[in-house]
Figure 1 (cartoon, rainbow, N blue to C red):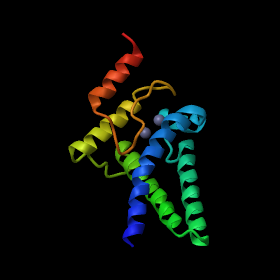
Figure 2: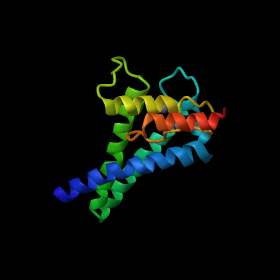
Figure 3: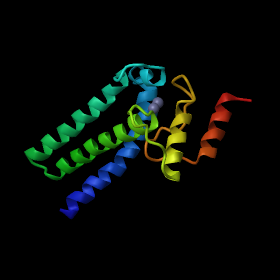
Figure 4: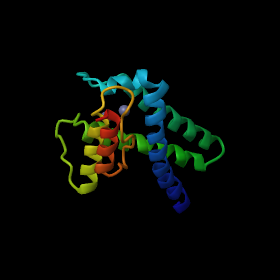
Length: 154
Ligand SMILES: [Zn+2]
Ligand SMILES: [Zn+2]
């Protein structure tokens, strides 16, 4: 049980790394055409960017299926991937972008930093030159602001 829990938590932590890299190199790379909707003003509830969430769900379901078929610990990796997806929706869609009716406010310094960092991610309009690609870890704001200044030029 403890072993499985460790796999689950390890997967959650690892997924932040995977998510950050995917956001930086895939979503702001060749996958920009899907992510683009998220960097433009939109009115509806769904955006093409949600395809990435669907992909995440399929990967999680695939891992659980393979785990069930033989290699049991993979089920917990799948659970971790799914869990990350849920946390992502809560944090990113609910908290960063206030898509939810009760508009939660940042409660502590960690959440405040995450929130501001994601604002800075959206401060750059196009595909290139963005900062802060993570969802649960953000570099210090002064570092991000320095990066933004440098990219914009004098
Ligand atoms: Zn982005
Ligand atoms: Zn966003």
